[in-house]
Length: 107
Image (cartoon, rainbow, N blue to C red; front, side, top):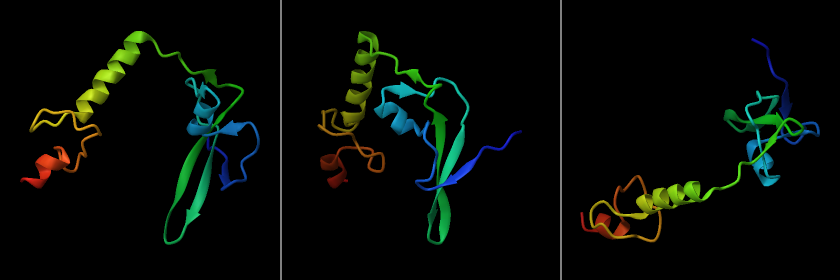
């Protein structure tokens, strides 16, 4: 097992990016292994870790097809539908409540 380089916060070399940074560039890791990691120190807790990928080996994001868009719309509609009253809440139902806020207030 090989170890990967570890950089401190904001000191990573150019050419590496996190998943979010790749996504902002319209790219995805594309199956490549983690190239490095960044550690951000936190007071009295374990450091935050972000994995870095090489930008030159990243692949373009796959385009959204009509079938994928429809599946995503169905999934989001299911997250907005209250299981108790069956109405569309207009927001994603909190998992902590399990129902819309109106139904949770009556229990």
